[in-house]
Image 1: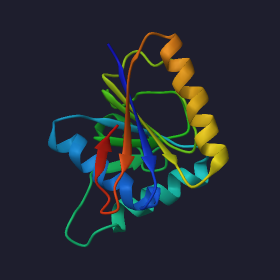
Image 2: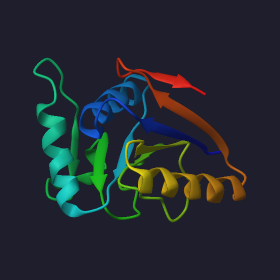
Image 3: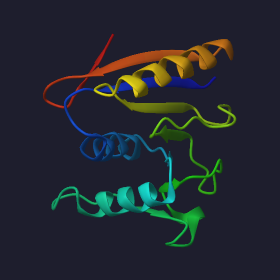
Length: 148
């Protein structure tokens, strides 16, 4: 069964929190899809993942890089899974057309934006109506996550 974790960003921006979550996913042997709201956002996040930390490197790519099946992390705007990912990270208020097929969905949303919080609540209800297991995580001041 798919588990959906809602990750409420309060202190760090998405560009700082996303790489840390993706590092954890790779450490645990997962492959990931990052579902973004626009092609421009995909390219911005693609650049962020190359430059977020001088001591780290996350193997990733987007359609502009080619070979999607070989990318442990694939950034896209389309409902697709060309790399056989078992984790989907949804940003920018995106929601996959079909939640099944992933072991875990991570829904990252900006808690400082009232419209994003309201939209996250609507997604929560839709996932609940699908009978999915839901968890809620709130970001701590140090960038960690506390389950609520």
